[in-house]
Length: 242
Ligand code: ZN
Image (cartoon, rainbow, N blue to C red; front, side, top):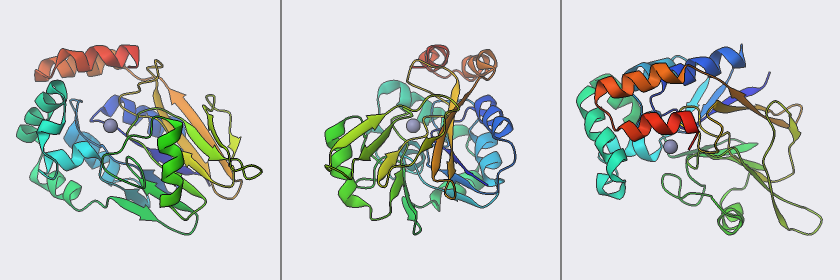
């Protein structure tokens, strides 16, 4: 059975529920961090994620910020405003849960990091040069990352050691190259101009990676963002997928 890979949920319960329903039954889940920040449902999302089967869950930069592990001045003003709000609503129990999350995880097949294996909490892999540099920082065949909110795959061609980028299409499983950096995109705040929630299925036995997109009730989330007094920009960007 494939492993469900989710990242950057950002307190968006409708998106998370839609992903879990669309994925169907899974017996293992990798969550690459940023459970909270931006969205209106931090407690509900942390609780739902905690209930998932055989969960490996990492800490993202927003999770680290609410714990005081990253200075909030490193964030832009809208993200900072949502962190201030989050601080007033996040339950002690969920705060403690976020506090015990690891920055990285690996087994013999796969390494997990929120941003990058070189700098797990903070580095964005947004270009080929950064991707290339990161291949020296994991020893497993594959490394799963989030943080950029873009469902992109970087891989090394074993023939000539060249680096390539692929953007897998919705529901088209791709064969895993021998070495790859794989991003499932963002559940709760996609930024590739496709507003649908993004996630991935990793099938170790079949050696495949499948990106899936699923729609959710964006208007309901926008209303709760507004009601909570969170920055309006966070509501608007959901509809645009930016
Ligand atoms: Zn994020």
